[in-house]
Length: 514
Image (cartoon, rainbow, N blue to C red; front, side, top):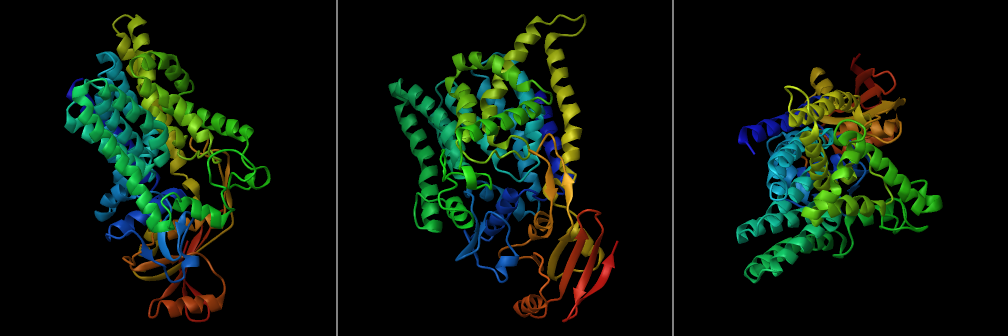
């Protein structure tokens, strides 16, 4: 594989993700999961696992955060640790685009031992040009890191029996995967680990390397269990379970089917059923298909090449089954930024689609245009057609979060104090490629626009609080933040009009508006 081509694909993947992250999404998280990840990353930059319970905590936190007896995000620590590197340089939005830039290189390392040069080149092109990669690469979600770790492990495990050092890297990648997305570790990393161990144990000389691979990979679940014990008191109880038990009903977040499963409003009546699982499968399949290659039918192209992948690397192909069926056991479909729960299935989908397209390249005959050139034109056309659509959706107050609140405060000359976020009204949004169903933006969702800026360790001069109209409570806020001015940022979600008011002790007085 020519290094200039890999470098160009890497730069393109980075640029597409970074432009969407910085400009379409404003460099901030928009979905509650991403907001929670950013909060935890900020805690880690202070070399702490948890933050103290905040003053006015009931007006300060968003979903997926636990406040008492300590403040932290409910998700595993692997991705927030990596994201903390971006927080430390005040560029958290750049972390996922940088990881996206590694995917073409990792795809080449992972797939070249199994496929010819043409197929591997096309696979690297898919890893760089897939709108699904760019979409999640622009987010604050953990799925891009998960895919990179899977490719890194596959590259070390799947090639010619490698050195101990390479398998150590694979074990470390799988360990971090377990600390990042434990379920991806189970449904996608597990088959890779089993495949590697089987290959090594067939060769007595490689058995020490297999032992190292297994030991390092096992360190991830062990550390995760220790983290659970620190936060919940039990190595087998996840913070997510504690959160959903308290906010919904006990046991609702567990995998499987039954009347006690499922934490959504519909699940409160019917639980989680096999019929609902098929509905989740259909939704994810539709969004995966549309964003994988940038045009409908991309998943079918991958499906056509899956058998060829299975003959060369069963562990890679297995993820095309284990990831969708595994997540079908979970009550929530997860469709935001596309079919994000299925992102680990790219481990199978990328080489499978490359096999199909390489077959096409070998049979197409057009004067003066080679077959592989036509395939590259197809990939570029799919990306060029879909990217502006996805960019437009992400820039359209995605998930009801607007990115200009800090800018508005700067315009008004506000540098410190307490800001009460006070959105009113509602607006219906439709994001057809990246979000399942129309979304009605309400004040509750829009409050995230301010709350996401809070530093749990008190490292920012402004504290953002959700709305309260109770004068007594506002005076209590003033007592909790002595000497700090209190402002209210009001905006009409329907029209976009906004104003900034200052509390004078009895009422709010207008400072600025539009």
